[in-house]
Length: 255
Image (cartoon, rainbow, N blue to C red):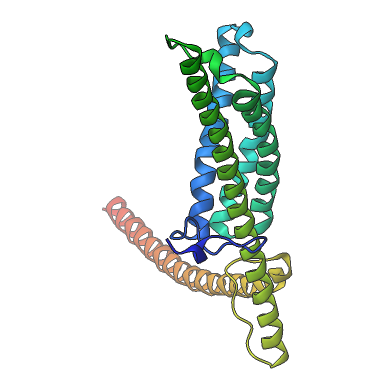
């Protein structure tokens, strides 16, 4: 594998695992992290509903509170990745860094401070065999702690790289827009809108509303004139018919 694809110190990465875009890498990190926080909260809620408060210790209570804090932060981060909003993902990055230090406490406690030989259930003859088995177990524990730490640091680095990339792209777009305005070029249209665009949005809307009202008034006037004309014709017809009926009735009485 080409070594140039690996990230340099303090330089933002360009790809995730040397083959995927940064956005895909951040999403692949956020979705499992989101599922883990929801699972932690659901487990604590299940213990609370079942009344098994003994299963909820201090450590699990802290994990539940931290997961509750992380649910809206990760949701906002996913929204930020989808819409390329750097502040949302930057907030998630801060949460991820704090989670790293919290998890490092458990990693050091499980893999380094606790003796791995205690969990061995091997019937090994001789002290030399026992020493070899304990050495292998301790080596595996240390290697696992190192690998988990490196993976966590790499994921933090990927999220930071995405934030730096989006922030740099936004600054470049702003500079390009300023140069275009200075040269008198037309400003490119944005996908979103801001409160400064309200006059531009409200003006055409009011004009369109006035046109609709004016057209409705003309249409209503035409309909009203037609209805009045038809009403007059109907009224005249009724008067004539009533007169004919009266004359016919008068003729019958005279006979």
